[in-house]
Image 1: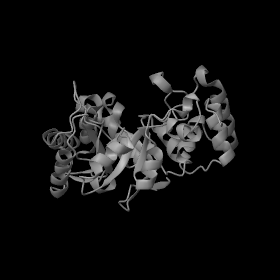
Image 2 (image 1 turned 90 degrees about the vertical axis):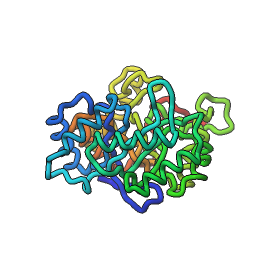
Image 3 (image 1 turned 30 degrees about the vertical axis):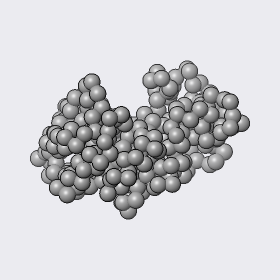
Image 4 (image 1 turned 180 degrees about the vertical axis):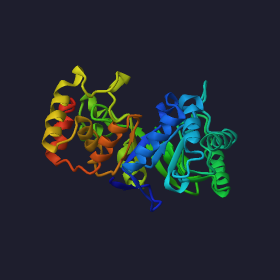
Length: 306
């Protein structure tokens, strides 16, 4: 498995993280087998959130690890997210502290390696969130902190109060959903791709050495489903199949390798409970697409080069 830096921590983490959103659909026994299979291909970074399955995803994972002496906590990198509530976003000190206690209890662990604020909270008071971070760090409950779906100025506003620094920004990114790069390449144009939805988040995170974690790496725009095998992206799927045949891997692996080819050294979040598919994606971390191949796929996804 290829390794990438986790922000400025000095820690190297797998280029493919395991997304845990669908873990609530598994039994503890199935979960235990899947964890072992993930570890066997070097995928020891697990991305949770307190809202996944209403907390059930974390609970099943925790139960699957509990009592299994071959799954050691020190061999796992556990990340979770909080701040999304049923009817609001909440990044208050009280909510963050309560949320983390619940996460730790469900996961049967004493600490998280990384905690992310899941969505920007319009009512966030940076000093208050930072105070919660400090208390969690001092108590040994969280090692590192980050955000998810934040624009650069939102990161900067929070960062000015956070002593530990922010190491991650989790953002949606796939071949079709590529505004992170399209807005930069279509700059000063009147084309649809030139619209900057992210505030130059890609460049900002690279400048600040904040690791981008790419979520929904196989998703079409507007939540229409997976683009792999979809007739809506026939040219892209043909290009993926052709490149996959030349490398002796699947189209899934090529689509994953496209993300990991970017020099930002992103960490891909693979939200699958299929061990075979996870291995395909993990193996893709060792592929190095050429510049021409990367752009061929970008164009096949419907983007332009002005």
